[in-house]
Image (cartoon, rainbow, N blue to C red; front, side):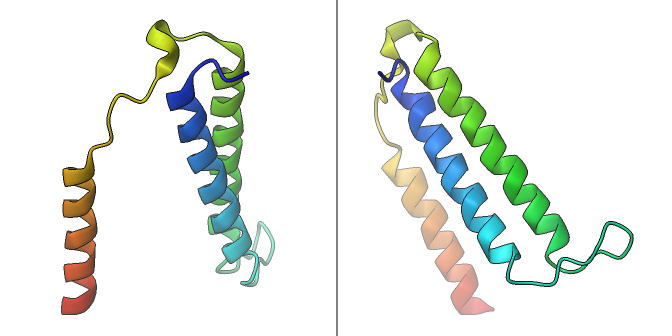
Length: 93
């Protein structure tokens, strides 16, 4: 049972992003620790992010939060501003 919904959603997001980065980095040459390829560091960072997501998921499933850890509201305006700025940057460059 989910005891903290906010942490559960954050953990899922981190896990998905970490697995996605790890999968994308695995398409590049990894090399070795002495002679790193272009996919070595992104793969390690993706794995660390996925591990962080698993730890947050574990916390969300085991520890009770004050107020149930409910998501009170979504910040749609800042999200739309951020996405708009990223699109503007993509079109201008």
